[in-house]
Every structure is written in structure tokens, then in C-alpha cells.
Amino acid sequence: MASLWLVGFVVQAAETSGIFTPKNPPEMQPLAHQPTPAFQAAAHFQHGVNLGNYLETPAGRSWGVTVSGDEFIAMKRAGFDHVRVPIGWHHYAGPTPEFSLAPGIFSRVDFVITNALASGLAVLINIHHFNELDQNPVAAAEEFVKIWQQIAAYYRTSPADLAFELDNEPHENATTALMNPLYARAIAEIRQSNPQRTIFVEPGNWGGIDELNHLVLPPDENLIVSVHCYAPFYFTHQGATWTKGETPQTGIVFPGPPAQPLVADPKLNSKKHYQHWIEQYNTLAAENNPSGPKAFTEQLKFLHDWSAYYGRPVHIGEFGAYTKADATSRAKYYEAFRRTAEAQQLGWCIWDWSAGFRYWDKNLNQPMPGLPEALFGKSK
Ligand code: BGC
Image 1 (tube, rainbow, N blue to C red):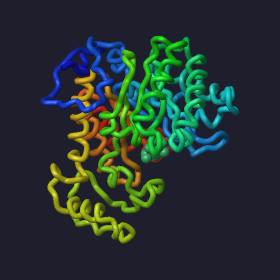
Image 2: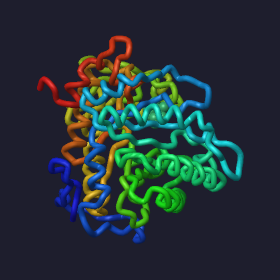
Image 3: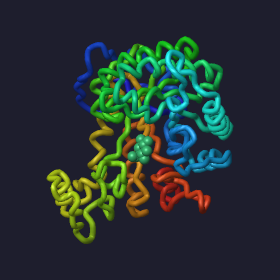
Image 4: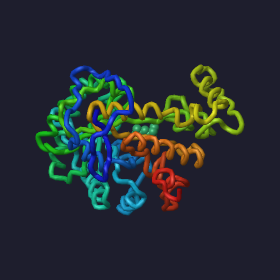
């Protein structure tokens, strides 16, 4: 079976790594000929960074992130080839039936796209945190399609290095099964004004890797599938407050085991799964430790094989570790993850540029410790 295989900027056929049993519904047909336009486009979306916590905020609100034109140059100099831009378009949509987008959001997005493209970065814009769609995908479907119609019309003449990602992390009621026909509708709409544009799609369960098995895509040849992976979650999200009480415990290293056993946080005492995880974290050697590369290696191999079988490029649109983790562990984690992704010929995009999972320290105007080496193999 064919798979993503980068040779310079051309993508060619390769073999799957072993026996692969396709599980998708029969309507999901492998694409026959390679390289498709999607594989050619994927070559421009290999090493990315998310401009997180910036344009996805509700209208008029700031989550503390600002960005200057120079920062796009810094991204490119660092070695990134693309920037993913989360955007809360729905916060700027007027009433039904037109859901007209306020011009103000376009000018903010234009600033990002113009500077990113001028710096030599490809750009991926999405709809981020569209909660109404997650809660009631049937009721919000019309608005979703109308928003994409407007974005597509506005950017129809933009360079090919601008790509659209339909929806960030569908979850709750926005299951993959429900999103499949909605994606097909949005893609058909976008194709009216953008016949050649590269479009990224994410499966349900927060862009979950296992959800690829439920994806049904139209036979369009310029679609890239994007997933998110934050395994090992207790490491990457340690100290995060937005995880419904799952991750209060800090001091978790990568890879485990720690020099001194970690005592489980009493707030998590009742969670059997957590106790088991800590027990294994404290005792298992690095190669089998749950806070180690084992947490994601098999999943990334699956992505490779799925991509090879179905003839669709796969991109990891988010992975990363919160700055509450110690700097050495963060660097080791980013390095292990990106090396594993690259070994499986997958494009990657870190969360994030200058917010809580940051690469760039805006105060010092320099990268966070160890991350250039971790991501770009400098001084190795
Ligand atoms: C969310 C961010 C969050 C990150 C890590 C992203 O998808 O948009 O708000 O910080 O995931 O949890």
C-alpha cells in the first residue's frame, strides 16, 4: 500500500510497516493514485507551531497573547514551516440565516496570514472552540457551513500555502459519525470558490487517533487528516486547571521513573486509574514507563499505517507539554515525540508559540530552554 514518503518536496509511495486491518466503514475508500495534491501540500505542513490563545478568544477578550510581525520571522528562523491559527469565527457571526462575519475579525486574521506568508510560513486557519457545534451539531450545522462559505469566498485568491481546517477537536455530541456528512457539505461549499485549496479535517473525540477508524471522507484529493495527541496526559497537562480536576499533580518527569517515588496527590486518591498510573510511573523502566515514549509510539505507528492504507496524509495538529512541567522533561518529551512522528513520516505542529505550552519566551525574546535542540536537532 502507498504511504507518505518525503523526498525533497515530492511525496512518493511507500509500504505499510506490517499487517494493517482497515476498520473504517466501507464508504471510506482508499485513494488509488499517488501522490495526490494533498501529499504535495503536506510537504509544506511538516514542522508547525500553534499560535494558541490569540484569535480563538471571545470577541473583545484577551488571554494575554499578543503577536508582532517579527515573531513570524522568528518562527521561520527557528525552523518551523507552518503556523496553525486557532480562530473563534463563530464569536463574530451575526444572526441567522446569514450568520454574517464582522469585518473586524478578517482584518485580524489578515494580519496573521500576510505576515506568516511573507515570512515563508504556510498557514492553517480553523474554527476553534465552537462549543455550540459540540453541544448541538444538528442545530449549529447551518451556521458552520455559512461561516465556511464566507471564509472561503474571502480567501479564494490567497496563495496555495493557506489551508483551511474545518473544526478543532469536535467532541461531545459532535461525533465522527455526525461530522462526516457535515464535513462533506462544508467541503462541497468550499470547493465552489476554492477548487484547489487544501482542507484539513479532524475526527471526533477531540481529534482522537482511534476515531480515524470512523472517518468517512469524500473522494476529494486535497484533504489532510489531522489528529491531536497529548499522551502521556498526566505529564503533558500537569498543573492544568481546565481538565476537570484530572491533573492537579505536578512534579511528574519525562521519562519516568522519578529518582524519588512520587506520592499520589490526595485529591486523586479515589481514582483507581490514577493510582495505577502512579504505581507504574514510580516503578517501571523508562522504555515501559507510562510517562515515556511508550505512551504514544503505537498510536503514531497506527497513524502511519492508516495513512498508507487510505492514501491520505495525516498531520498531528497539536501535541505539547505545559510549562508547569520541568524544563528538562519538557525538552525530552518534545524531542521524543517529534522524532517518533518523523520516523512515522507524519507532519507535526506543537502547542504552542507563546502561551502556556510555549516554545517562545516573549520576555527574553528567545526559545524556551532545550526546545530548539528538541525540535530541530540543533547542537546534537
Ligand atoms: C486548547 C487550548 C489548550 C490546549 C492544551 C487546545 O486545543 O485550545 O486551550 O491549552 O489544547 O490543553
